[in-house]
Length: 161
Length: 412
Image (cartoon, rainbow over all chains, first blue to last red):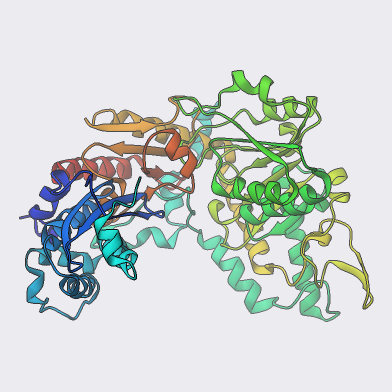
């Protein structure tokens, strides 16, 4: 490894580059209950998230499309893998833990529940890229909010006609 | 002719005038290729600003004491310096503003607010910076005017063959950029102004990218208004200029109200000064104006024709070197372009590339460059941009090419 690439290598770990080149769960979710269009107008990154909830409000299915930098696309790919099948409470917990992971310089002990997502920790050395990493998570946060108040309806019926 | 001129300038010695060019970034010597966003400042400008604060600082046009008179004299001399620099007929045609953006807003709100009516057409181009688009959107929403756009061709030039059908007698304002901040295209300003005049349209030229980079004379261009910023031409931030021809500035009502711009004030009503002071409400950026004059002295000491030739030569060299890189596409015209080069790499998104380059001390810009409609026009979310000034060198370009090659391997 080229020593001068230290921070870069940590930011762009091979797993991240792999996910950005071949994103998982990439595509339209035909029977999505909620669709969230997340964009980063300052950067041009776009994430379109489709989410389907189970009977308890957990994330049964989650897929995305979009385009943008390696960080935003890899973050979306890793996130969808991680969140599929998780309960609402687990998603909220991971959202908070992930935010800490990419923003808190001092916290070197990342929450264990993040698992694979810990490869994103290099972002913390590049504050201007935090919003790229957080974009898909902001979309999921919005998807959870969309269902509040009418959860059962929106999980059962497609939002689009 | 330029060849001989070039040999007179010791370009590498000029680098010594810019303290910041000795900075190291992430362990590497700084390569500053973000000059279209803001230029660096020579010591001569920094010294003048410091000296102003140490020896002359006071408010202008108000005090009868020595410092106020010194400050006023220096401020007004700077106005004359700007007038001479751009070939204005009089210093009264020079309004100091915060920058290009404020200058254009002044014209849109004060001139446009008085002289444009519902149904009038404001003609712009697809390559305008947001600063020459949004102010016109705000105005047209307010008064019911229409916006119309000269399209941009695939090669990044204006589709001038469409101009005759667009520049109709209902066009009251034609506002366009001199040099595109993302494509580097140099537009034929004098020709556009002449055609606008033929249909009775008033012209505004956004000279933000041209003012410090090439010879420019407002009377030769034949424009009615011209806007630029100091900070892209070696001057401090927060100072800019609106040039307006006397006859048109004289009939333009005030924009901001306050001190400095009034003749007399009663509780009910005020009367206003003549231009340019009518448009300079409140305490102006005195140090900025003085710094701008110093920047003009510095630039004229080098020569604008020489600086332009340096830009053109360096851009040609960059294009030649970039052509060696597979998977790299340059936007914009092949000829008649300034020292602004936007490009996209198959291997890396502009943000990833900018982050990567920064780790090697190379300052690029990645994103939409305040040109969102233009990015959509070219079907890209953004580009990477390298933009040059006279202190940039071929050796720096070679280092950039090395870094781009590294990035292509890294992200492949």
